[in-house]
Length: 355
Image (cartoon, rainbow, N blue to C red; front, side):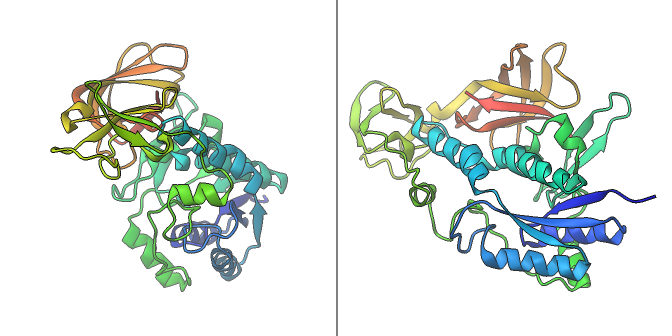
């Protein structure tokens, strides 16, 4: 019986190279795809010509074809435009979540299916499991907590999860590098970057948006203390995020932090660190994973940003795509635009976007 073709998303890094290696060892027929998302990236985590050459070299060594897909228009529409809009509206975007939902497991999957591939294989550190009771595909945190990327995958639909394979979910990063070395892959020692993958080395998000002709043109406004006192002026709300301390451009005898951003009135509200803590968060566009929606409040560990350790909370689903998270202990810098992701142990229950 002919085995189904699988598409491997190849960034040119060690993780996707090892994911391809593990599938190749099973004898599965593969085709590799790299995604060109933006032009002129130098020293980022994707999209450079060197990355594409590295991915092609790995594919050749493993014996399958490799192609570069030009997804620049998709990336601008689905990632960069919302990224710029979020900053201009006083929100803190999470482009990596959107990139997985709309690019890797949507646009790429669609193009993979066009050449006969049934599934997309990526180098994400997370675990997917079929639930025989419900027929749904469950998402779990990776075995390596330092590399876990389940937070960035919460917004995939059940169909997207069912069409994905994540071979690295039960491996640690050192084990992945050992496999790459044993295979003789040229990406085995390739360094990682924690910057925006679509930014050149040393670029800020403002630099990226300016290069793409998307720099926010929001007008200046006031910096106001939560008590109502005017403390200064700013050049645009897009330069601030909730929790920010540095770069406020105002003098104060004690440290001040951005508490909230009102894009409509162009006001940046600041206050003491103690004022950053919130007991609740309102969510929109909520997605549940093991079930369509819960029958009542759900006790969970909730992460409010990718590097957040998680906090005990109760999640109340309102049945209209919104939910309220009530934390057992107030949490610092709950930022609109970020994702709040719910966990029960290593099982991802779902998540939503902080309003």
